[in-house]
Amino acid sequence: MTVPVDRLSHPAVRALVSALNANDEQAFFAALTPDATMSDDGSDRNLREWTDREIFGSRGHMEVQSESDDGLSLVANYRNDTWGEMRTSWQFTVANGKVSRFETGQA
Image (cartoon, rainbow, N blue to C red; front, side, top):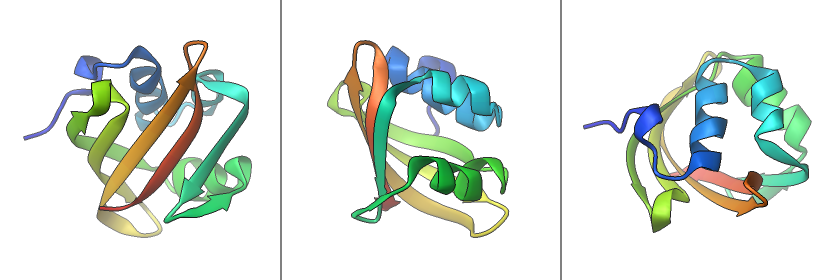
């Protein structure tokens, strides 16, 4: 069973996932704080380089399977043209209504 993006509990997470799935880079970065950070599989990455490679340059898409922690933790099937589909976990930190950090990795 999937969770429709428009039903995600947390508005900041909902905005970020909506932008990701729409391949809307401008809306994606608008949903982040200016100093946002991220990690992939436990290693901090350069946010712009990572999103160019893993999301916008490879048509990334997130199909949310479940949410917890008031909508700040997701389990999703994530796919892109580079890696295909994999089960991933996502944790979000929100400040002032925007995502200030996200951590992702295989679930």
